[in-house]
Length: 220
Ligand SMILES: [Mg+2]
Ligand SMILES: [Zn+2]
Image: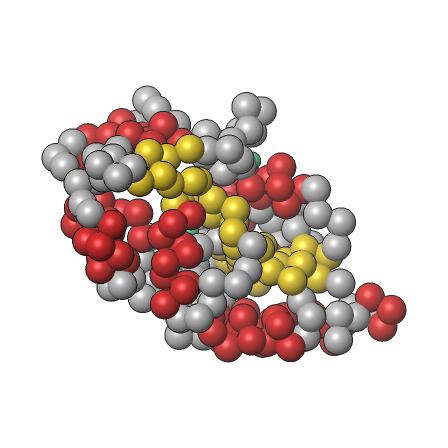
């Protein structure tokens, strides 16, 4: 069996949904928080929590904004291929669970387990983010420590990612698909990976991988 762990922002989506929501709906100050994070003064979990608290919008306004976030045009076929081949997939993101559910739901794809930071919106439109998947021991300061979650998986693991939130996990899976900053990171750290541009490439890679897995482990 192969289990796929897939990043969300910049991997399934064509842009970072949290950044997009901030640009549209956050009160002034979110960029200063971003700069503090870039200078290393605060961790990414704290950065996200404080930024999300600056969202000033009704749920309807938030949903309308999320409706503008596009996904990779090969992801739907990839999801269908996973289902047809009995390959499990978990979406693992240092982003916001509500954003992921909403964006995937629009495409009829909100059917995979999602591990992400948890958003609560109060009736007064106060936005609160919790990070139940945080790890005190991880090198990353992320709200979701991907390495400890992926590290526990017993099946053959395939990972698909694009950026900094994927660094801590990059050396764990048997197979990594990387683009962007994650590909640069893998290059620098001698971590083997398959480059990809879109999910059509990842589907092809998974199909080849399923053929190469010994027969008794085959998922199809
Ligand atoms: Mg990403
Ligand atoms: Zn980690």
